[in-house]
Length: 253
Image (cartoon, rainbow, N blue to C red):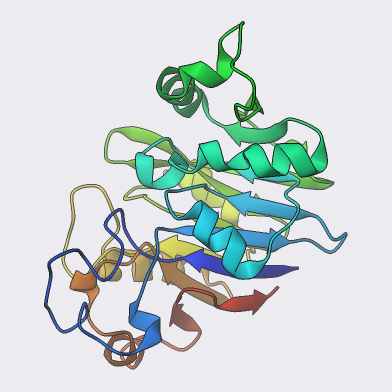
C-alpha cells in the first residue's frame, strides 16, 4: 500500500492568514501545510480517502486523482468535511454515489449541514453520497477496516486501521480497549498539534507517549500547527522512526 499525505495542517493551515512568525514565513516547502487529509492506494489498486476538507479540490487536482472508491470521515468538523460538495466530479466520472463512512455523530452533522444533498426532491447536479454509519469492522474498497474510537475533547472521533497501518487525527485520548485494536501496527499516523498541551489535541509529548506504547516500526505526525516550530528543527529532536509528516509525502506500507 502507499499513503500520500495530501495535507498535514490544522484548521487554519500553515501559513496562517496574517501571521508573520518564523514558520509562516518559512521558505521550506515542508512548512506549508494544507488542511489534514490523506489518500491510501491499496494493494488491489483501490483509492481510499481519509477526510475531505476545504482543500480537497486543490489536493485532487495536484495529485491528479481521477477515481475514489471510498471516503473515511474521522469527524464532521469543517476542516475535515468542507470539501463534500466536490465529490460531484467523481459522481459524474464514476456514475455512482460516493460511499462515505463515519460514526453516528458525524452522520448527524453531515446530514444537517449538507441537508440539500439528502432532501427528497433534489436540484440537478448536486453531489451524491451514500452515508454508512460504522460501529465496528467493515468492508470498503475491498479492504477490512477497523474503526478506532478516540476522543477529541468531548467529541467521539474515528481513527481507522487498515492492515498494518492506522490513521488517527484530532484526538487527545484513546481508551485502553481501543489501544488494543492498534496492537502490532507497523505504520502509525497520529496527530500532534504543537509542543505544549492543548485541550482537544495531542501535543507532541503526548503523541510520543502513544507511539512509545504501541511501538510501530514508523510513526508520522500530522495535524500540525505553526506553533509546533520549523519542520527541520523539530524533526531533529524526534526519536528514531518518528517523523513530522509533510504535504505530498508518500509512504510505502
